[in-house]
Length: 131
Image (tube, rainbow, N blue to C red; front, side, top):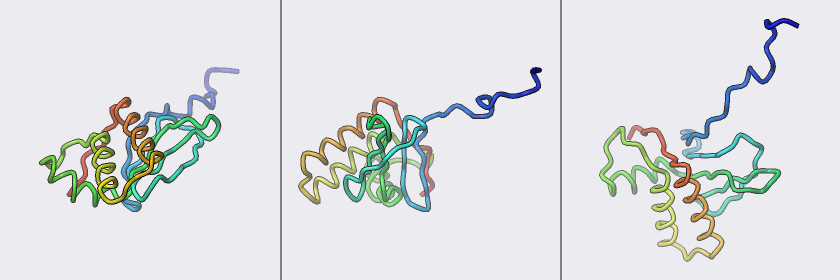
């Protein structure tokens, strides 16, 4: 048993939580841990991700992101191309928009608060999007 054999664990890169934008789905997703998860849709914008085994909240998905960014965030915050986007701001803006259109129930309010807390605690930011 020489050193020329690699262990299987050496072949896997360590998971680094990162906010990812999926252009085909126009969705931003952030998940803290690389574990199986289940998703619970809150409304047309927000979906929460829970650890399959512990049911702990570990992430979120924001739908319709590019449209939301171009029409609401960029002009309001006078963002320049290349600026990073703090997802805390995105969640706050999305919640305000949803709150202005419909009267959210207590469960929706709590879901947005929890997603915002993850984005804030983990200092989640998204790479710049081209306009």
